[in-house]
Length: 119
Image (cartoon, rainbow, N blue to C red):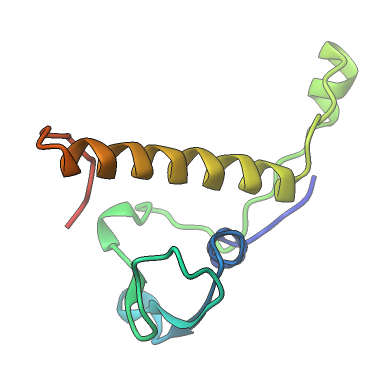
């Protein structure tokens, strides 16, 4: 029952990592660049492009807004959210950061690590 944009989600995740982003452009030309770094451990620098729009992920019949209604799940299953979006982002970023550190350590010691990266 709460709605956030993809842009907001990206901004929240970037803030959790310790960086500030600025979005420029529109549609398929939109990008997000680093404008400030608040975490000295980050390997990126101001001006780096962190996000690019990829038209492969557009839906054929894109809609302007999507908002789920959890009422039925609450009534029929007794489901209630256990964490907030902020808490979920903290967990997701921490997990991804741990994995990145593990991959970096393995690579440093000569191991080949398969990392999913889209071009």
